[in-house]
Each structure stands twice: as C-alpha cells, then as structure tokens.
Image (cartoon, rainbow, N blue to C red; front, side, top):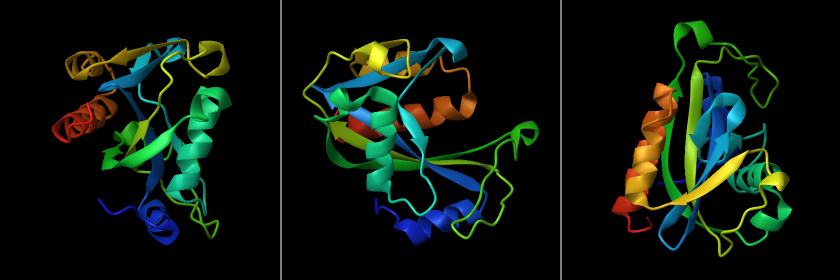
Length: 172
C-alpha cells in the first residue's frame, strides 16, 4: 500500500471522508484491543488525521493521546497494513464538521481509515494513563471473535478486514 501524502489526504477530505489512523499494536503475534465502557465497545486505538498533518505525525500524536507517553515511547512503526472506509448511514451523515486544508466546509459522508502495524515490547498498559477502561492482548482467533461483537457494522467490517490482513501477512 502506498501511503498518501498530505495533499492526497486532503483530497480524501474533499470527497467527504474524514481520514484517520488506526494503531495495530503487536507483540508476540498478539494485537492490542481496548475497551471503552461509555460505548460498550472493544476496538483498536484510532483517531483523525488533522488538517495539513502527515500520517506519521497523526499516528504518533493520536496513539500518545489515547494510550499515554510511557506506552507509546516504545512503539516502532512496522508497516502500513491496509486502508478501508466506512460510509455513514444517511441519518449520521454530516454529523461532524469536516473541513479541507483550505478551510472549506465539506459534507461528511464517512471515514477513511489507515491501519498501521506498530511493534511494541511493552504489554502492560497503565489503563489510568489512557482514554480507555480496559485492554486485552489477543491472538488472531480471539481478535476475530471479539471483533465480531462490535455493534457498529462498518467498524466491525474494517476491523475484521485489518486483522485478516495482519494474519495473512504473518504479523498476527
């Protein structure tokens, strides 16, 4: 997969999709899943790519915000895994503000995700330093089983696709 540059990321915004990064933290062929009680949701850590921001900067910034500096200090970006997108149902479209790098408002149709494999040698996560309520390190089959419980259909689909891609590439 070719990683998009800042101009290409803005083109994604112009098409109505909010670009975001997803951290696929890996250790000993296991992947990190996080739980957010407020949403009753297990997921991979993720966040949006800010205007005029590179993917590399976004993944470091977002993962540090979500998981804390101590945990992310050991992260080593391995590779770009895959990209995928979710188109929102009509009732959810344009629910958030989306602007291009030139500050033009755009009707938000959905999200475009860039999944990034990140190696870490730390498995103990201080949950109090994160935005989450719990975490698990899961092997491939357990990650698929947990992903199938994600109640948001689009997020479930893209998460399972990414886990399958990690598995087929021998990383999980």
